[in-house]
Image (cartoon, rainbow, N blue to C red):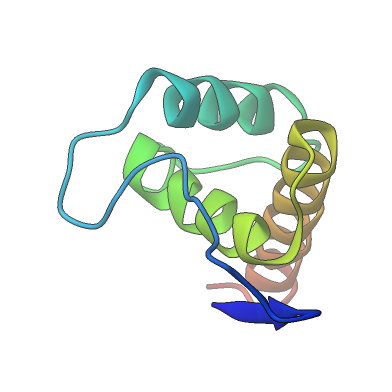
Length: 87
């Protein structure tokens, strides 16, 4: 929640906490998955795990393109680090 010139703004997330993934969230997950350049194990390649990165990106960005790009970049970096550390 933020405030700009006396107007209270609330952030809207594509899926609310505890709810099943919305169609919008599922689309984000699928787009992020399609942009992965790093190998991802089948145990980690779940909608839930990928949505964690989408949710984080939704906190920083408003535009769908920016959300997907930011989430994909963060997840690729995460996967690259796991590979480098042999995790």
